[in-house]
Length: 351
Image (tube, rainbow, N blue to C red; front, side, top):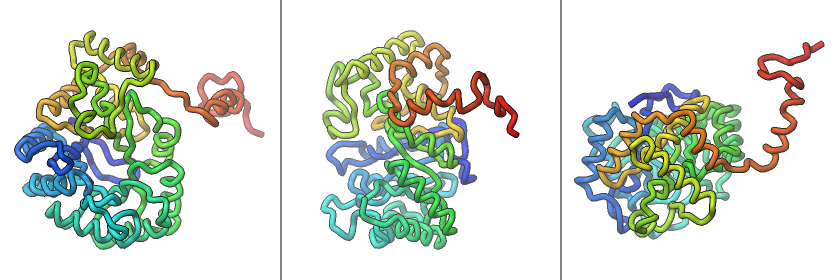
């Protein structure tokens, strides 16, 4: 396991994988029982992983409870991230959902109790609620940092314009900075390349990438059976609905046959390589339900795709960036000095 900092705006040292614990517990009717979850956690830490990602809403609070139990002996050596906004109680109320200061305070106090700790390393705002003024949210997060209840504040599943505005407001106001973003990213979901990833690179934000297997689609298992996230949850999973998606799965399976690895290892290795190529390396979030799935993820750490294999997967999964990116690409050469091959300096000296 290699390590990186969580973005360029922090010195927080995190492993190149984060362990996603949305499967820890059975509060959603399907998931991982306590003993299997403990085995997954122990093996991840044994492999060098130190970044643990959970949320108050995962398995109706059971994930946080199990994570709190598991991290207790090594709390200060682990980087603990959790989320707020949705709430742990399935019977949600007006005051216990959203990003308002009241729910923020109550949610963090509840998470600290379930996690059996007195601080959270990274608190993600799970979703934008479209109601709470960003100034209120930022002030609330800053208070939590000042009181030592959280160390860093970050945004999950937010559009780029909301993150960039929040980052600017925090900086000019002297509040705790926005430290990172969390987005879905895989061979079958590359929309983050349009705005979110370029924004994170420009602002120096940490990046965590969830669902590197497209909810299980990229393992190829749904071609034989619907068993898994598709049958248990029916959400946060991709299916083969168009020719490009089918071509992507075909390419992953064919590449796996070439290197004598599993499709899951190939798909994860591709995301890992993409994450390493960011200006500040990103961190894939792996979410195994069984210990055998974790071993598959760990095996991907030793898989280096050839340039040809990487490029083939990149090409078959490429998305149209749309406006204004395509128009900008056509104009870029002229803006950078005509025939200059490498833009180290203007092709024509400035007067």
